[in-house]
Each structure stands twice: as C-alpha cells, then as structure tokens.
Image (cartoon, rainbow, N blue to C red; front, top):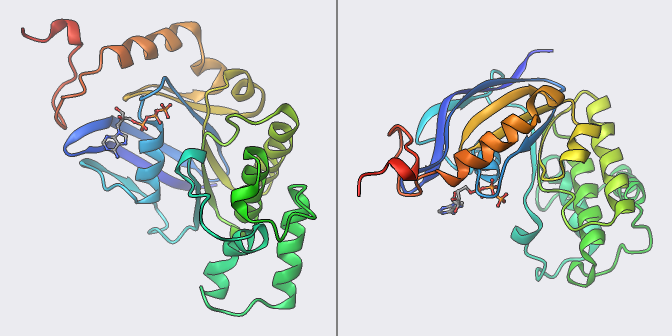
Length: 253
Ligand SMILES: Nc1ncnc2c1ncn2[C@@H]1O[C@H](COP(=O)(O)OP(=O)(O)OP(=O)(O)O)[C@@H](O)[C@H]1O
C-alpha cells in the first residue's frame, strides 16, 4: 500500500491568517484516521485543504498519483443546504455523477446501485421524500448513501456522527468500517474520543499545529489532550502565515 497523501510543511488559512500550521506527514492507502482536537483546532480547514477547496498558504499537499485518486467529502451538517428542492433518491443518485455526467442517463444497473445504497443506509420508503423534511439522522444516512455510490478512494468526513442517536452512529460506523475493509482511505473529524478509540486505528491530534499523529492509543493520552487544549487557548488569531507561534501571554503589550 503506497502513499495517497503527503503533507509537506503545509500551512492553511484564511486571509493570510493560518488555521493549520506546519503540518507534515504521510497518509498511506487504506488507513482509517481520526482527526481530533479542540474547537477551532483547524480540523475542517485541513479537510478543505485536502479537497483542494483551500490552497495552501505555504508548503504543499501532494497526491503521489498526481491527483487522479477520487476523493469524496462530507462537510459538517451545518454546511449542507437542505432547502435545495431535491428528493432522497435524486440526492443519492448524485453520487454517480462522475460516471454518468450531470445530464447523463441512469441505466438499469445504476438504478439498482442507487436502490442498494438507499437500502444499505436503511432509508427504503424515503426515496421520494424532499430532503428538507428529513430528520438530522435520516439526512446523514442519505448523505452516506451518496458516498457509497461515489466509489471514492479517499473519503473525508467532517463530524459525521454529531447529534445522531446510538443506532444511527452504529449503522454509519459500520459503513466506515466497510470502506476500511475495502482498502479505501478514510479521514474523519471526530470529537467523541471513545468512538475514536474503539474504531479508528490511527489519529492526528491537531491544535492549529500537529500535537501528535500515529497509533490512536499512543496519541490520545491525557498529556497530549491537555497540550492540545493549551495550544489552542494560546493561539494568536491575528498571527500571520509562517510567523513563529507565540502564546498570548508572551505577546508584547
Ligand atoms: N471561512 C473562514 N474564514 C475565516 N476564518 C475561518 C474560516 N473558516 C474557519 N476559520 C477559522 O479557522 C480556524 C480553524 O477553524 P476550523 O473550522 O478549521 O476548526 P475546527 O477544528 O474544525 O473546529 P470545530 O471543532 O469547532 O468545528 C478558526 O479560528 C476559524 O474561526
């Protein structure tokens, strides 16, 4: 299994202000990685950088395959526009657009794939429901069905289990484990550390800069978690890219 992502001293941010600072590391094909850290640690920013939605301020995010790998991205629920007038079936079918094209026809085999994806997330009977009428958990199931059809090599999930009940979390975690078993690479932003310890072999702990990255049980230690909290609390929001970070307490008056 080779590298699918290489972070080389990458800094990502907004208006020259870094949100993720000096991250280096390799993601190998088939890894299942949790991205953890306090609020504002830069986790969503990192996924946007991997997706190519946010160009690095410095450094690079390389895909050794030259960027040909298919990447799927599930943003945070709050970023998904549910007022869009589309039903569950059509939302899930969008997962096929790379193959069919936006206006391409859907074959009988495609219809079977769509039905299988809807069944796999337990949404049979909801096909014609407008997505605006779904509960949060049903909507997340529909989005996972779309991911199933995307057939991506790298899957990025931003807080995929937030505000979901235990049964929904356990069904969706099973899908993530299925992707892992199929050799896909999954990076998921997660706050539930017990869930991470139970299901994610590797973890990147971020606090604007990386705190630690490796085997989950070695990364999610009390010492690392308190270091991450301290680093986020001390972060200077006004810092500019590639300036050394300074704790707020040391800033000149
Ligand atoms: N579009 C934006 N424009 C300017 N600043 C932004 C933007 N998006 C995020 N930020 C800032 O970047 C920093 C990192 O935010 P990010 O959303 O990546 O953190 P996070 O770790 O995902 O947080 P959370 O756990 O709260 O979702 C924060 O200070 C945030 O205010």
